[in-house]
Structure formats: structure tokens, C-alpha cells
Image (cartoon, rainbow, N blue to C red):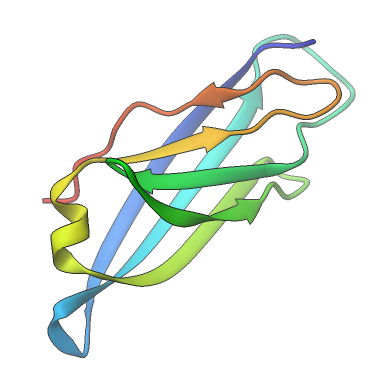
Length: 99
């Protein structure tokens, strides 16, 4: 298996009611070594212990989740976890604060 890294960028915007926030979380999964293959599979997104959802990894290595959540959910940092596939190991991003 090949080692991967996962980077995460998070943007938030108010979505209607004051307690609802639209979260756009984009994870970038990259290989540590040179490879002709690209990571595939999915990335799961969490805010603390709260599961936000998952998104497939595209050919460019990105996975994007767009979801409306209660603002209180974002009191915890957001983390992206790449689940790995048949060739690549899983990896996790550093936590991102949304304040």
C-alpha cells in the first residue's frame, strides 16, 4: 500500500435562518510517492464526533462536501478522513476550526 496525505479547506456561509450554516469542505488526497495510479474511494467528514457526510474522491484527488448544518455542530473542528482503497492507505487531515 502507498502512503497518502489529506489536506482540508473549509468555508462557511449563513444559510437562511441564523442557526443554519452552509459548509463547503474540500479535501485533497495526495500520494506521498510517485505513482501512476490515483487514490480513489471516499472521504468522510466530521465535526468533532458528529458525522457530516462523505464525498467521492475525483480524478484530481479532491472530494467536496456541501451541507447545511446547525451552527452549534461547528463548535468542534472539522476533520476529513480518506478511507483508502486497494492501492492507497487511509489518511486524516489536521483539524480545521471554523470560527
